[in-house]
Amino acid sequence: MGTDMHEGGCGCGAVRYRAVGEPIFANNCHCRLCQQQTGSTSGVNAFFESENVELLSGTLDRAALKAGSGGDQIICSCSVCGTAVWSHYPMLGQGASAIRVGTLDHPGAIRLDAVIYTASAMPWVAFPADIPAFEGFYKAADLLPPERLERLRSVAKKAKEVQAASQAASQAAPQGETRG
Image (cartoon, rainbow, N blue to C red; front, side, top):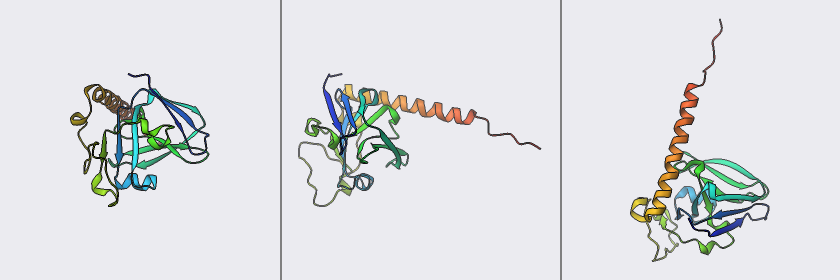
């Protein structure tokens, strides 16, 4: 993994963070949920392993909103100004942080892998010719280089293991006793 550092923060400056290395992948998503949740034309996220993301200052509030998969996306926002700085999506769980690229000090340093859900993009949005664009999502194996694909698979595998352990623990918990 590289030693590149990406720092960023919220709108008021209370939250500062650092991400080390290069993202696993980065997307510009034009789905309706991203439009609604950002109040903009799209969401631009760079996915890093959470172990490579460090909160340097401030506190984050967490809100659960539905992701396109139907699972909960956890949006982490500055507790002072409300700027969303990253999210945790259901497929990757807490193991990956989807940093909102616009909160980076140097957002242009992130190279997008894809523009997705173009079918629901605003009709006046133009897409860069040198970045693959998809009407929906894409198969990561068709787009990501092997090293980043392996990183993605590793995070997804850990998320499934955590989810399975959590489900097993909730099923094993006593359901309460009935007293007569």
